[in-house]
Image (cartoon, helix red, strand yellow):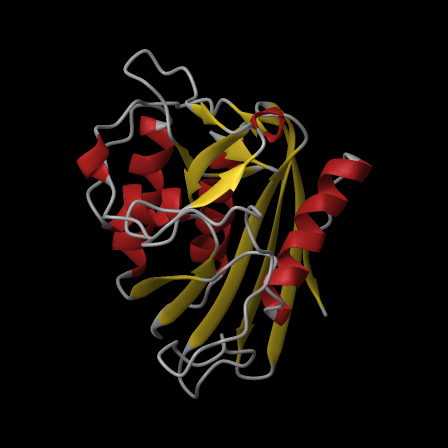
Length: 227
């Protein structure tokens, strides 16, 4: 399913019908996420590539949060350092996001790319597409634009993209696009994909989100611009 345009896993029966308990549905933000939350059914929309998975597809969850998903969480000592805002010497750094008004619906992507003293941004309107298509396309644009000969670190809040591109998840839809992005990653030769929590205050992730939303709202593309 999708929740506010982002992919989630939702509790359902074998037919795919949501399992509602106390007016809420148990959701996860990823198959390896140990935390379960509860969302109102009205806020959940079927994803274009919706699939019913067995219970053991996900790791065992902690108790669902009765107040629903929390937008922000204070970092604990065990969490990794905050996502970077500058590229390390000799490397390139990219952030990207996809936005979709409806799923499918008018879609756009946003991306930020940094290396040395360069800082480029992209806001691109895709037309009618799904959220997953937008997320994958955003990664593709970063890989195509990034300078060769240096490691590229890409931060995305799309667990779907990381899964189908690097973790062996089977893509039931978007197979041609997934194959094309994989080929771009292989051609570049040194790309690492990192997951960043969306809408959690990460500066460049928030900027990529704003650029994607801008593309959807304006129905226009800027091309790559220095910022």
